[in-house]
Image 1 (cartoon, rainbow, N blue to C red):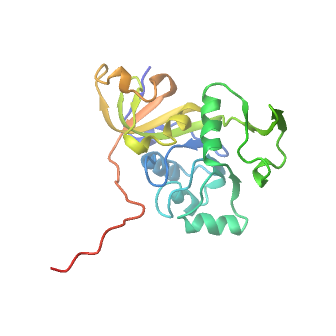
Image 2: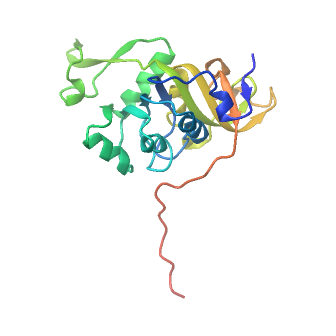
Image 3: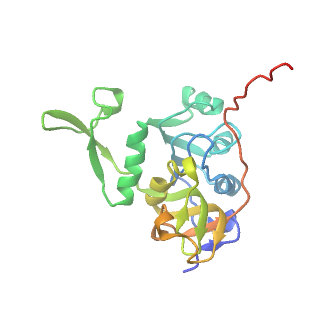
Length: 234
């Protein structure tokens, strides 16, 4: 089964359709599948629902798809650092389903394991719990959360082999593994593709069984909030 493609556009060929649900890895600007997001923008696919921790910033990450009005709904836990996200939400142009961060990660992971739903205490007694089933376990109240079964997963990894085994670099792992698990098709962009057998099996973070297509590319190393000390006078 061929998994390695020559470009992000090729890797998404025949996969995209209007109105689809996309699970995207990344946290802030760390571990964002930027090449695949750019390819989605160029394809013009619209009415998209994205399950992602956030929407990047105005000109990077999912933010570039907000600019072109290709996103209909966000399933997210954090909406800061993106003025266009805030503007569209407050004006009613963009639907938003808030999720506690751990709940969002578990909704993705659960779907990847074939689990349609799970109970959690997080959100009980808040707006998050409205309209959801409540159940008691050992005298404590829990709410039912459903797994996120996405049409497409897009993620970014550090290294891969041609079978799709992925290794993420430090905190860039973040939401990428659970996002990769929950899609009917998973496309991964990576910094390097190494020969089969070169990856230490004990160091593989996501097995290739979850990954259907891979593309290698050059990535921009952005810093979301640059903090430096003032230079001391000599």
